[in-house]
Image (tube, rainbow, N blue to C red; front, side, top):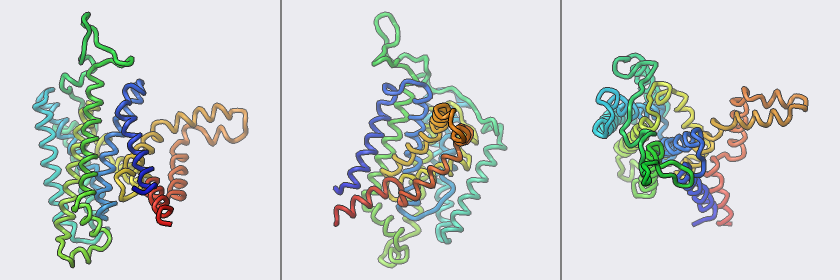
Length: 356
């Protein structure tokens, strides 16, 4: 294995290891929320990279599939009560609806040019967002919906107790339902990510790359390009829906801004660019980098502004209210110094040195 690829894989595996032990390493509630969000977005970014990075499909409907999966579980739990039956039924319903939407969009649109397909997916996502906001009797409308989750995931649930009936602590962490919910999300994310790694390393992954590089040539040597593009579109959509189902269980709340907003689609695009298109390991790095920046850049700027309070101009520039400005500057610098994304650039440079 070449040095660049090895470096990226090592970094991604370290991130996965930190996520695995996050409840024990970072015991603050906010930090666990960040870890769960990173795990979910790794899956979202990796599944989107399967489209844009490996197949060359530009879609703006990925949050639509994510939202359908989340709303499937949320609606089932809201109207049928807490239990594993509604969870399974809601997940299955979300996956079926997602697959049908993906097939319909894929078969109707993947024959057109890339820009027109992108616009069609954007229109479809906008329609679903409007429906989720307007159908308040089913989806809760703009306010969204809260619901109860299975007993296993409730914070008051004691996973292990001592002789006195008190919840057991491991390294200071309570073995309760909140821990079970986190590891449920982590395991789902890890399994889905592993599945996508297997896909891109399989003969299907090779065909997808061939379609990305030269669609006409792939068609000419006998591959049914539309069928392959539709298949990968459905796979990516179903993966996003499953991630949405897991996230709905973690949040215990689902609303348009949480799972369907265009802002989430922008985040996914930024994560793909930051990590590097066409490398699954880049999804781990890109998702982690952007989520950490969104949660902690403002705090860091507040500390920096306090430390430079006696200096001219700097405290104003480092005002925490300007964190989005600095996030944009950081993104521009990343694109400039890592034109193929962090993982992509490291892999390219490492491979060139190895070949020199």
